[in-house]
Length: 186
Image (tube, rainbow, N blue to C red):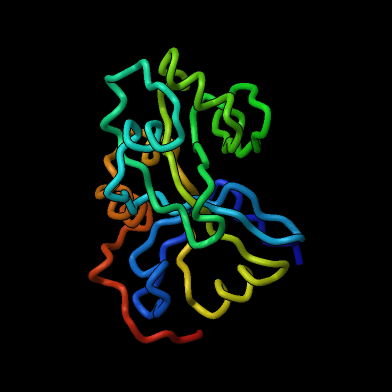
């Protein structure tokens, strides 16, 4: 059997998800391999803007037009650390290639670029991430904790946060209200 690779997929938390971190969460999986998985929640804006965040880390946000962008709760791991999901991917000091045009970066050089030039223009800034150990995500998917759907960069970067989960559900042809809170196996 071929190993499951959910890189560049959305995870949609099933209604049975009891963990408050993930209830009604849409997670974008940035990396999934035999060592585990890493993703960021993309539909949970915090009460924090990019301008507020830059002020807190003592960086001058020169491109004021992007200051109102929300910072998201990315997940319960390393919640004090920032991650920038972005398109185009570019070349940054600490960056993970997700696809040919999407990257996840955690180094300060991308913040300096965003501040000075507003590039990369398409970004989702998160604090924290969601992580799974080896085989953990596969087990959770098998237990019906998550729906999986191939991701769309357009949903990530062109939809407002509150529309991302419904847009991902639409790919499956269902709405969240149609999901049962009772798990079963065929």
